[in-house]
Structure formats: structure tokens, C-alpha cells
Image (cartoon, rainbow, N blue to C red):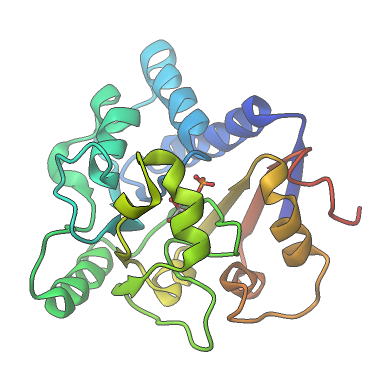
Amino acid sequence: MQVFIEKDYSAMSKKAAQIFANEIQQKPDLVLGLATGSTPIGTYQELIRMHKEEGLDFSKAVSFNLDEYYGLASDNPQSYNYFMFENLFNHVNIKKENVHIPNGLVSDVETYCKQYDEEIEKYGGIDLQLLGIGVNGHIGFNEPAEELVLGTHLTDLTEDTIKANSRFFDSPEEVPTKAITMGIGSIMKAKKILLLASGKNKAEIMAKLLNSDVVTTKVPASLLMLHPDVTIIMDEEAASLCKR
Ligand SMILES: O=P(O)(O)OC[C@H]1O[C@](O)(CO)[C@@H](O)[C@@H]1O
């Protein structure tokens, strides 16, 4: 595992985007695993800049998003589908047919989730998976629990997550209570993983993750310690409680 501590959010985002860009340049048909939330927005902005100013080419890249709120249509401004097009896809030359985001309105969820995993496999698996981390240690929407599900599945969001994500909604009551998420197994199958954490509110969870020598399903991100190629990039605030 490699850990980088950058001065601030902007430096963290630039470092992450540089890693992305290097991978795409080496393998133009890279299969990307992408995340939403506030954390990756700066990375996406930097990738857009690199596309516009340096010609970073996404025309052969394929993407799979980690998760989507269950019950929200893709054109709902609160959906992760909407977020991804607003914050990245509308501004780079990725082909729409190469973009995959879980459909939050699907009725046969079980079959749909199985197909989502099969589709990832069809492309040879995810080459580079970008992750944020929830204040409770969730990755994707794999919430702390006694057991974690391997494949893509429908899950209940915890109170912590609903509270944390309510900042994007008018009220906590509007936050969906369920989501479709890639499972911990789908994430762990990615060849390379990049976890980003920024800000004081992530300091406690990053300390829990990095100061500890155990893995536990109660901190889903701790499973990443078992992955052979994980890079963590934090800003100084997120790293402030980590032992150095
Ligand atoms: O980056 P944020 O907004 O702190 O969210 C943390 C994580 O939780 C999620 O919202 C749930 O998947 C992710 O999109 C994000 O990586």
C-alpha cells in the first residue's frame, strides 16, 4: 500500500488525476471504476482540464460507477447518474455507450445486479478503481455490518450515511434509504485501487483505518488492506490523526 499526504484538497485532486492520466495514457481502453460524492469532484475537474488543454483521450475508456440511489431516475439532479454527467462525462470525450451506472429504477434488482457484474467481467474487470470513503468507513455503499456482500446488490443505507448525504438534499427525509452498490468483492477484484480522503471530517475514519492492524467488516474500507495494489491519497486535514 502506498500512502501520500498532500497539502490540501487541490493538491490531492491533482495527484489523483495524474495517476488516472498515466494509466489512461498507458492503456487507452482502460476500464475505470468511478465514484461520486464531494471527494472526487476536484479529480474530475483536473481530468477535464487535462482533456481540454493536454488532449487526454477518453475515447476508448470504459467506466463503471460504484453505486446509485435506489428509486431515483437517472435524470433526477440528485442521482449519481446526473452527477457523473455534470461533473465529468459531459466534458470529456468518453463514449456514452461505454458508460455504465447502476439503474436506480430497475424492478428485478437481483438479475440486474448479476448482469452488472457480468458486464464488468466482459470488459476484463476494472483496471483502476477510484474510491471515496464514508465517515463510517463505507466504500461504495458497502456499509459497516457483520457480513459484507461480494457482488453488486441492493442495500439499506445507515443513519450515518443518510445524515452525511443529507447535505446534498433539502432535508434528511428526502435522502433515499436504499442504494444499488458494487459489492466488496467487485471492488477488491479491481487491479488497482485509489482511495481519496479529504477534510477534517475524514480524520477519524482514516486514523481508524491506518492506525489499526486488523481488518473488520465493521470498517469496510479496512478490507482494502488485503489488496495488493492500493494507493491512498489524503490531504493534511484527513491525515491529521494518523500516526506518522
Ligand atoms: O466524498 P463524500 O461526499 O464524503 O462521500 C463519501 C463516499 O460516500 C459515497 O457518497 C457513497 O458511495 C461515495 O460516493 C463517496 O465516495
